[in-house]
Length: 63
Image 1 (cartoon, helix red, strand yellow):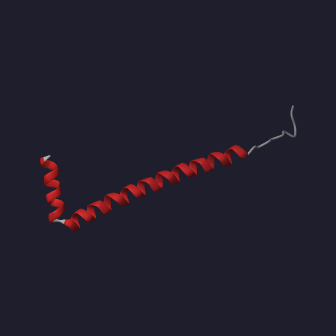
Image 2 (image 1 turned 120 degrees about the vertical axis):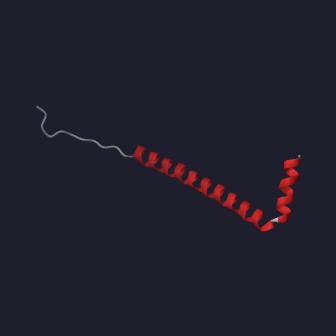
Image 3 (image 1 turned 60 degrees about the horizontal axis):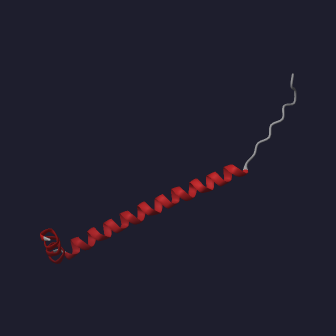
């Protein structure tokens, strides 16, 4: 409980620093989630596009 009181005291004494820290953590979490979703979406798109392509090769001469 002492740690929580110490943290609350620092938040009250330095509200700008606390706000900037919270903003930085929020931006970092948002960026991480955004790029994870982009990676997942791109993997799904590539997998779907790869499943639709078939290549048929016929040999002209077989001997």
